[in-house]
Length: 85
Image 1 (cartoon, rainbow, N blue to C red):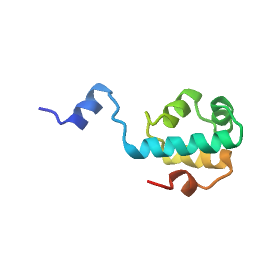
Image 2: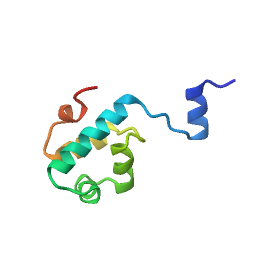
Image 3: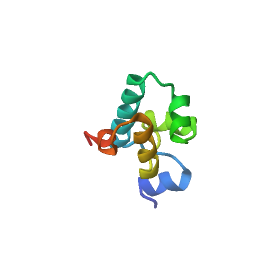
């Protein structure tokens, strides 16, 4: 019998983790403060807008590479994006 997390990986079901939600909300906050749409931020960070939307909703884990790109596009530090987790 598979554990829940192993079955999630096997069947592609994502498990939302609290840190994903916190990071996503923080990215959204900084984006809105700059008056950027998801599409514009995604373009500035060279990320797909669908991926950015999933990250902001806490549905997808953000990679370190994407965090660095987002921090540069938002003109903040990576530590600003992960504060609170």
